[in-house]
Amino acid sequence: MFKRGLIITAFILFPLVVGLACSFSQPDPTATPVPTATEVVTIEQTEPTEEAVTQEPTLPPTEESQGELNPLTSEDVQELVLLDKSLWAQKESMVFVSFFIENPNQDIVFEEVEYTIYLYDANGDELDSDYSFISYLYPEQAFGVTHYFYLSDESITVDSVDVDWVYENTFYSEGLTNPMTAEEVTYWENDDFPIVTGSVFNNSTQTYTSARINIICYNSTSEIVGGGYTFLDFVPSNDYMGFTSYVDIFDEQASACEIFPTLTYNIQGKEGSDFWNDVTVVDDYFYEDEYGGILGGAVIQNNTDQILQNTTLYATFYDETGKVTTTGTAYVDILMPGADVGIAPWVVSPPAGASTTEYDILVMPGEVLTSYELTENPFIINDAQITGEYNDYVTVSFTNTYSKSMSEVDVYILLYNADGLIIGGGNDWTTEPIPAGGTSEAEIWVNFADGETVDTIEVWVTPNSWTEFN
Image (cartoon, rainbow, N blue to C red):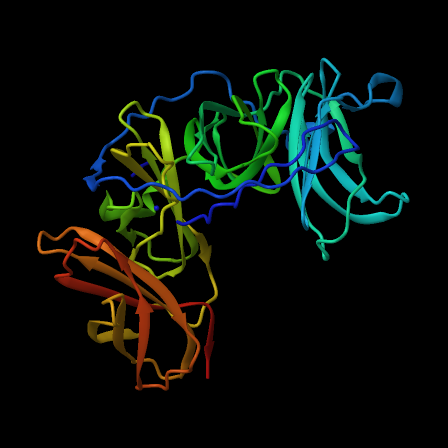
């Protein structure tokens, strides 16, 4: 396994009122400050050590193992509890809701808890509702939930909020605990655009896909003052993934944050570690620009003889003390057998005041695509030139050598300086059909630091899962 960026647009933060469960008023919003700039520094690539977790794996049960557990009756189970500590707040058409559900049982797990949140007006009429899932609620676990609503009309006023739930199953835990834990959680004020970063550890022998991270923030008297949530595409077995998320803080500044990672409804588990060698990073470079953003990219290679669909690159960035400053994600829809592709993910801007000095990369190979029109990439690149008023586009000419016309193809670009270092790039897709044997052009927006000079342009044009053949 080899670890070595993605843009998340900042929420426009606004102060709202803090309170308990179901009745609030709203103060006026404050002004939005402008982030400060930082000097240009080069980020050092590191090879982080990977220490395996020694505790016994704590896997969610399989259907087979559940069948072997003693059946539960209603008398055996104490029902879930909605705790008193909660918050909801409204700003124009956005409503933020945060609350806790507790499993009071010492040895019972609740499976597939579906919770529904209801918004009501002053007359008790339902304005909106939404639902989501907690895959497992473990014994004596109080799980924090954060949720956003966006009302159809900002003139609508929410007067109260209610929560209820149903669950699919309960079973004896027999030592089963939550495999996901969070560590090194850091709250960054970020010039009044708060960001929370940290690491989520997976203490099991399975690599899990699709994890959700709920974030709840508190003031100095332990009252909830806001939060947010984010997702991780995967968390490797006995290892960790860094995360970063903008959060909304209401009423006053947060002084602490609590993280609640959970497996999502679409979770999949992968055993073993051999698959990490299916896709490798063959070149990479990231650096911090004059505005504090992180630019660069990587080239990844499919080492198998099969087509891989939806390969994911995830980069985690750190300061000199090892704290996560930001993260980035990029996806390659179709990766042909033995082929490589260059990607320039747009990394989330690090918090103001952070000093990003190191990074690592991990690539999750996509699923094998057994039925596809092609077995190799039919596109060849004819030419690529920097264009645009600000030299912020690359015009690419390419030819389709396949016997059919093709539409909906991906274009990836990496830019290199005279030292051979990746300084930026971009990607997009085309929609117009390229005839068999025909040549087409695409103009792709690219991003690199103002102080850098482009020496070489590398281009990859690839089909994807939406490509149409005629």
